[in-house]
Image (cartoon, rainbow, N blue to C red; front, side):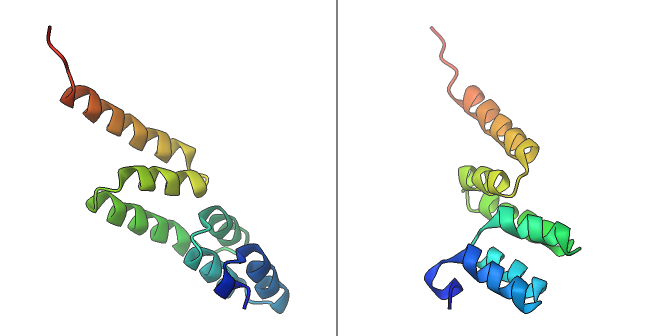
Length: 101
């Protein structure tokens, strides 16, 4: 019920108290709470979350949603990946908009 109204933290807490960490990770992913999903996955030894993050960011990149991919990396506690993607965006923007006087 908590998940259906967007209360991810409460939903995750309930699922963990119920003894279902896998459902808690899935709930965090569905609600796009990537930081929580990564934390739960590392705590409960679910390495699949890394693959889901990679797939999600890849899909975003293909759709041209690069800043959303940066935000996903940021929320998933992956600041280096976010910074590298921002650097790529900045480099591309710099080469496109070079002014010659």
